[in-house]
Amino acid sequence: MTADEDAGDSATVDEAEVRHVASLARVNLDEAEVERFAGQFADILEYFEALDDVPDVDADAELANVMRPDEVREGLTQEEALRNAPETEDGRFKGPRVS
Image (cartoon, rainbow, N blue to C red; front, side, top):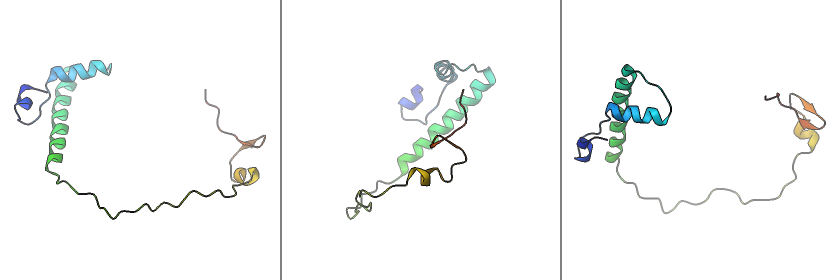
């Protein structure tokens, strides 16, 4: 942030800050990208400032939990669970090899 923001003006991001963030992210940016991202960061910060205009909302005290209580129920058998699997092996789901 710049001194302007500290003084209460709209947020700006200078190119040094963009270079710093890029170095933290280990991203190499050319000068055109640094300039473009500085402008985009400023736009993003302006959007955050718009949140200051959102009025506070009181919580509704009459909300109730609508979830059902946990109940132990009979589950699927192994055969039922595997019935629609595209591929199984030795009574288990078979997925693609990840290497």
